[in-house]
Length: 232
Length: 225
Image 1 (cartoon, helix red, strand yellow):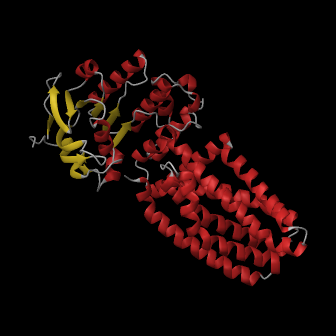
Image 2: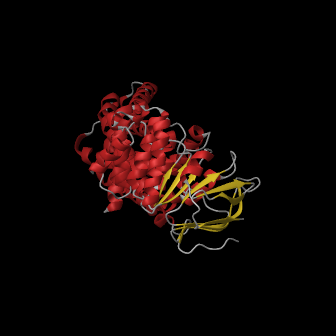
Image 3: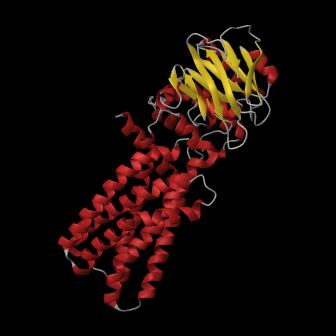
């Protein structure tokens, strides 16, 4: 059991999940204070995506519990969804809609103004202003990832769950992700990011947490920040 | 109010996609036209037999077209993880269902309105004074069908054998809707007994209400982990 972090933005206790075989997450504990950036590392199949999907309410724990900003991911899933934004490995956009239409849909379904200038700003920020009205099916994989980044920025969520945010992006796109994470930290957002890019994680994260064999441990604290405790 | 807005945005998304791909429109119109033509050919030249079978043929065409429509509407959601992303947003699951239902119902009703004069002409069936009631029957029948089709298409969307499982699972459930719709339509076009048609229509609306309550209550289990 880890020492609890007061007012943790993310709190896992004895969390277990699996897919029929040995558990992918074997009773993990994790506390992340608000405003921290935590990088999740581990080999393929270690459970990084599973952990992010549990926190995004897309999976249910087999045992234990997970809370985001104090809300249980199972019993208070809607409250959790109001406060998190997730970036998946895939783009998560509708191919027959344009980039702008996808962002308008996302904004409307999050209860935001779908006509706001913020949509144009977000598209410009991720370098998609020129392709805003093109159908997403004509986008490259990097452009789809940039569109997902624009949707993430628009969501104005307090917790970001990022799964391989650098995948498919060029150097400029990867730098954009770094900038967005730095801005998120400055704005007090909590970020959990699954990545295989350890040098980038050491440069951007407050703590690097490794998942191996279903267990969690903090392997580095590059920013020497408190507020991240892990165990199993 | 926000929930109603979410319903309309989900429906708008589906209809916008369909307006660009035309995948459902082309497949359902072509399939329905072939069905009506083949059945008319099978009934032969007996005008009485043709008239008696007109509404049955219309509903067979609508039913199979409805399966295509519902299955296709979920495929677009599965591409590139779009539905997975949508379900992380704080949108009520019932709004997702109702939005997809609205889009599918709209497409099926439009198809029904398009096929009705075609069937009437091909089968020599008089539409006459019961036309408004017949349109109501088509609206209620396609609503009941879409309620079930969208629910089961969502349930089977992630399965490898979805194309074969969807009709196997949904048709036994949708039979009461189809029977009531065929009876009501036949009463209007065949015997002109509008009172009988009205009774079947009321039963049809009753089925719609029951299915709507059940599907709305259960849908979150279809899309939740």
